[in-house]
Image 1 (cartoon, rainbow, N blue to C red):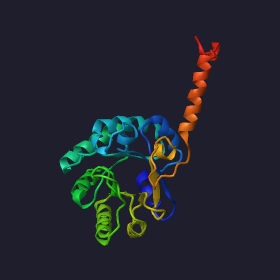
Image 2 (cartoon, helix red, strand yellow):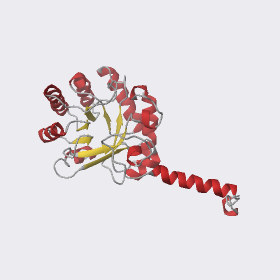
Image 3 (cartoon, one colour):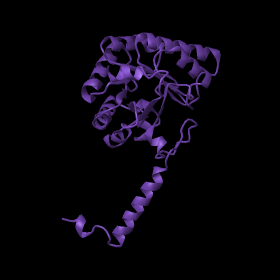
Image 4 (cartoon, rainbow, N blue to C red):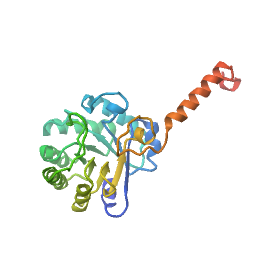
Length: 257
């Protein structure tokens, strides 16, 4: 049984753990605890200070994913397809193949439902595993992010999109900032796992951006829980280094050749 089927079998049995990673060092730490490691196009804002994920390029995703691949041994490695890399089935297939070949990842993730369903079907037909993404879609979001599923029309659209993604063959779906009752309904309706970010505990699993979780970012989004203030520990280490250098306590003989 392959890793993706094992993940699907977790549905209704045990929670799925997922985090983002953008480098080997972080990936090798979180791999021990995760079912899915995502190389997210969130690296645009997290690492490059872009205002939007739209500025992230295919080559950026590939280079970071190659690094992450070296640190991931156990988890499913998923790579986001960035903005303007899957505008039609031909383009999507060409770029997905490039990602899979160069990074040795296990799957790709695309944002959207009905609008891109034929693109997703074509990828899956060509044996490229796909993770879906519904709710807030950062690649197409304009202005301030607002949670999805506030009204009946929005709820029906997202639920229908989720059903279409499952029928197309997606093996799981990320639900981003989706209203609680809708996330619960989608999770109970589908036979594939849902992975939530700001979408309640009713999802089959949860994902967060690792930099948010460890407090490296100053983000204060409602859906983020900071489990550590890593900035504090980095500051202490750097301060101690600076003091040692000034007092000539570093480097010692054992640090020199």
